[in-house]
Length: 163
Image 1 (tube, helix red, strand yellow):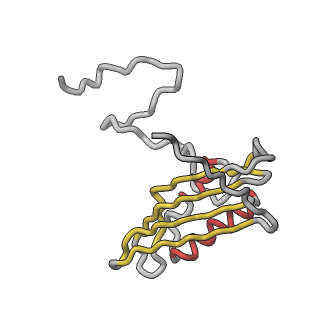
Image 2: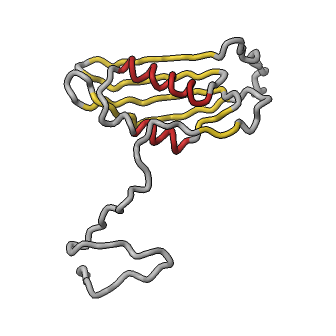
Image 3: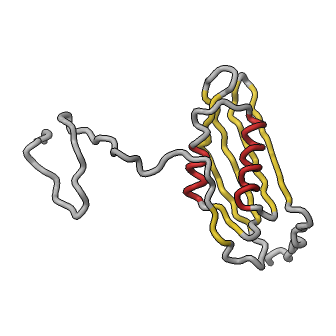
């Protein structure tokens, strides 16, 4: 069955999508989101307890400051929050803001931790960056911050399950 321009899609309660003559979707006048360096926070819902928040960011992109070529990384971020937690959409927009910025791997990795510490002052944060191969070399950068005086609770060792 061929494409028939005389058949309109069913009406919905939302405003219909604007179309151009080639029946391609047009970009919205105002994008639903945009890159931003502003990290938003919300109150930690379990302030009395140390618990781990882990973010997996498999598609980080920035530019090599020397060649302008794209650099890609997979980040794992581990946080033990104090009074504030980072809001995930703002974290996504924050990472997006690096897409067209040139920076060395070590600088970007440390800046992200610095910005998280400034935004939420966590008890603990660790960023592990797995920078994909460039020039035949894969780079791993791990950055940590501990709040002064914070000590993690001792690990609980449980007996093995019977077999």
